Image (cartoon, rainbow, N blue to C red; front, top):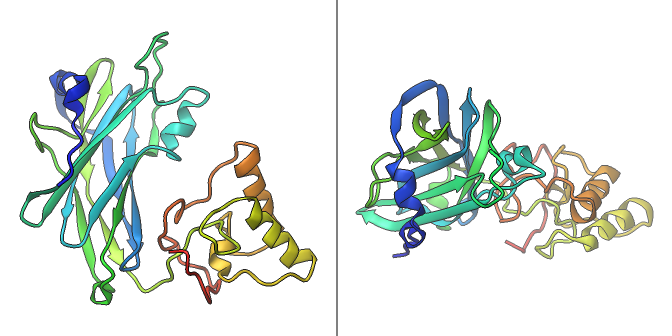
Length: 279
């Protein structure tokens, strides 16, 4: 059983001590449904729709621990990271319990956007479907899971002290409306987007692999779906350009499945994947 506690820094107690308002229809916290192949990693997005500037958040989720194991909670690559730029999330922490009850695991992630001096009132502007955090799960390699779904629930009152799904607005915590989601198990290849040469890493070697294939009669990528770095369901020079921008020019990272193994949430779009052994 793994537990990472906020209490060591006192931040959890501070978050829980804030005045908690009633649930608001204008503020909605949602688990975005996704899919994976049995044995793969599922990256689950928690997204916020809100009508006021937000100073921080806390997301608390439960799941069926017989089919899901939480690997990590993070915010790298989220809309929050982009929308706060050139500033950044100044404090982020997570906690998890693999088996709080028979068949139930839970975990939480919390962020404060303006946590260290100079305090400059850094906030997340109002918007719709802004990704706050990624909950990443591993799954068992059980082919009987194909065609089934498992529920992910935004649950209030978990842990001790009790944790709630909240956003912080003007110094007070507000309970958003909660929308649960699910992971559906499908029969698709496991891959990492941007990995054109199949070595499990998206780097300059993949750019070279694609350029050699397109212009110098080089061998084909072993998995065209993985080579689709920009996620447009085609393989062309734009994938090489996308990888160069990501690696050297602070461009956007490849979309899921990345950086962990998984399935393409939108499907492979007809792109083949004859061999991919890096997952």
